[in-house]
Image (cartoon, rainbow, N blue to C red; front, side, top):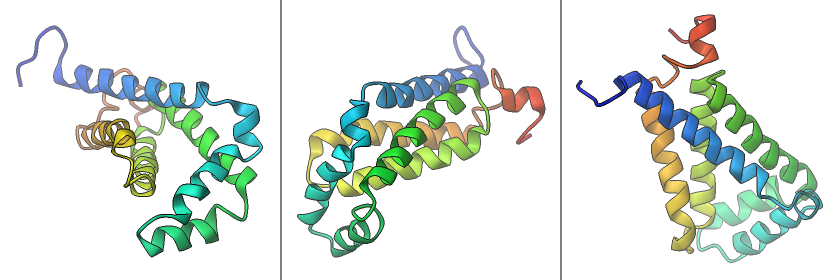
Length: 149
């Protein structure tokens, strides 16, 4: 593989770090007071209630709606953990797979709003490329500690 300026593994690390910064921004820009009071989950509940797929409606009813505060913390701190983990390259394959799942859940929930799909599709694609390209090979704590070799 020929590349300009950096090696292929280094370009994958750049992609991984960029995705980590994207997740960190997702966490940073949230209005934490409103979010942790359950505002984000309440908003999502309104979307899930009208969803055309019954499994989305029922899944949201069972998992998220009964515990909006807990789910708000889970989502927000998952974004923070993903961002930090990907930036420093710690437990990278796990972070990439968890981020992919989080993006896919959001994609399924927001299936009607194509304006929301672009960001999540790109984040999911970067997660897949980062995972299958083993983006933890350079510039990562995983590499320093010899994890996932």
